[in-house]
Image (cartoon, rainbow, N blue to C red):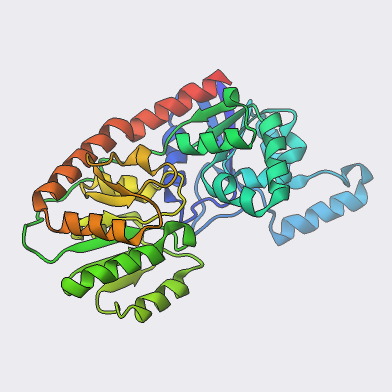
Length: 364
C-alpha cells in the first residue's frame, strides 16, 4: 500500500474549505494510506491530522534533551512525525513551504501543489521566488496544478512539462445543487464570492454595478468574503453611493453560502487574475448563470455562451453589458444555469477527483 504524507500550512483555513473536504474524501481510498500534517489548525482539531508545531511543554522537553545529548542538537523535531510515518510520497500543498521541509524532501518522492498566487502573481513581484521555483521544479518528483492555465504559466517559468499534472478541484454536487423558486419579473440579485483582493476585480465589478443601479435602482449585489482589500471595497461602495444596493458579508460556512447562492439570480466575478475559482464551480453547481472574465483558468470552468458569459478582464463596459443582458433575459439565465449545473456534474464531481488522485499517487 502506498503511504502518502500530506502537508498543510493551515488545516481548516476558512478561505480554503475545499482542502479539508478533499483530505477526508481521498483518505477513504483503499489502495493508499494517508496521514495529514499541519503547522496549525483553524477552529477545532481533527482526527488523523498531526500538529507539527510544538506546544510550550514539548518545546521545553526538547530543549532539555538537546542539553543532555549534543547529538540531538541539530535534530529538526518538527519534522520527526513525518519521518516516523515513513511515507513513500510527501505532498506539500503549499509550495511556498519548501524551505521548512527541505531537510526531509531529498530522501522521498515529492509532490508540490500550485493553486495560483505562487505561480501567476508572486514571480512578478519577487525575483528570489522565481529562482526558488526553478529549484522546486528541478527537485520535485511531480508538480500538481489546479488548471491548465496554471500549468502553462509554470512551464513558461521553467517547469518540466513531463512532471506536470492537472487535477482540478471538485464540487460536492449533492450539497451544492439548485433550489426551485426563481420567478421571472422579480428584482435581480447578483452575488460575488471570493477573497477580497485586487486580483478578484471588485473595483471593476462595483463600477459596472453602479451603471446598472442608475436605471435599475432595486437591483442588489451581495459580496461574500474576507481579505486585505475589504476596507477599500467598503469605501468604494460608499463613494459610488451603493450602500443601499450592495451588501458586504464576511466569509460564510458552506451551508450559509449555499443559502446565499440560492437567493441570488446571477453569479458575477470580475477577476483580473485567477487560477480556477472554487466559488464559480459552486455557483454553477447551484444552477446560477455566471458572468465572469477570461482571466486565467476561468474558461476551464465556464463555457462562454453555454454556461455563462465571459468578457475581457478589466473592461467595465463589457462587464456591464453582459450583466444587463442576463438581467433582461430570464430564459437565457435559466438555460445557462441549467447547462452550468450539468457541466459541473459531468466534469467536476468529487468522485472523479478522488479517483484521479488515487491513480496519480499510485504512479509515483
